Amino acid sequence: MWRYFNKKFINIFLIFFMIFGTLYAQIIEEKTEEYNYWLDNQKKMIDEIGNTIININNKDEIENEYVRLVKEGLNVDSLYIAFSDNTIFFSDPWDPPDSYIPIERPWYRLAMKSNGKAVETEIYYDFSSGEMFITVVKHIGTIDGLSVVVGADIFVPNHFIDINNVINDFEENNSIVYKQIIEEKLNEYYDWLNGQKKIIDEVGAAFVFLNNKETIENECIKLVEEGFNVEYLYVVFSDNSFVVNDSSILPDDWRPAEREFYKLAMDANGQTVETEIYQDFFSGDMVITIVKHIGTIDGLNAVIGADIIIPDHFFVETADTDILKLLQNLFN
Image 1 (cartoon, rainbow, N blue to C red):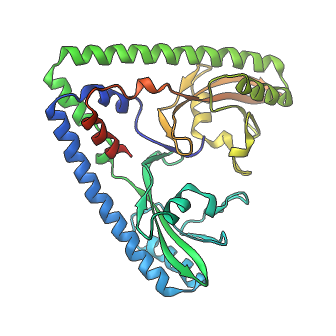
Image 2: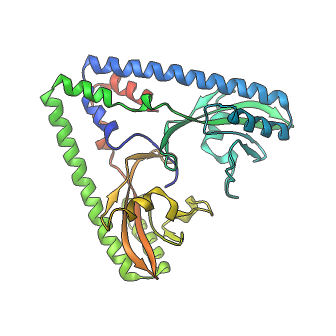
Image 3: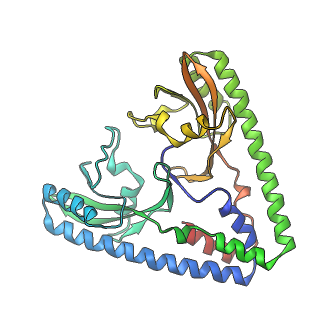
């Protein structure tokens, strides 16, 4: 519910159906080559930072160096260095919760098993900034007997993400067959989405009737355990309190009433609405969040939300495996 991957709305799975011909394969291949060239330069930057850090060999000076690099215009959102004793320095003022254990994070493990090479995560969507990022990490060696990993969250230029030009090329090609395929898939998706919204309407109405936070939390847990096909089901309140089927996934200082999904629900005049499609950074599933302002409970505005896994068949369905590989290379 708080850090995600991938593109605007429905464009990604549209593209799987549009690109069948040689023209589209060439467009994607060129875009992939351009992206890989940019990515290699980001890795070289991390290599250079790692070489600088390993030669400093003093924790206080290392932290100062990170802050200086970002202030001087290094094009990263956050620069950080983690040690195997779970010490971590950030170039930004973010203060991680006590439960944040660097050596257990996927990016740290990725670096440690990459034999000293700079490697990248998948592209992901940062819900707070609305931008697309990639994390590049590298195990640079040891300092004071501790393994050291450097990492950077790097903004991905929009022209690598926006595939509208490819869509426009397809439309100009005026293929009736492919348009029919796309239209059928869109209709199928919206039928599924509307079905999910109706479920949230029914659950929300039941929760308002319960009118008790503890009872609502127990019901969230019960619904998910009994097979309700969501990753997380939650109700958040205007005083920043919340109930959720699994609270272990959230930091202690989580303030839901300040999140985008809460604002989306409050602006929707009681309608059930959805976010853009995104990929959950931890599970890898493609997910959509459906939210609704359901009224007041104990005098507080209440918003119900559900992070719902989208069936795979809406995303990948093409006979051309070579083109599929190109697309996966572009978005992974």
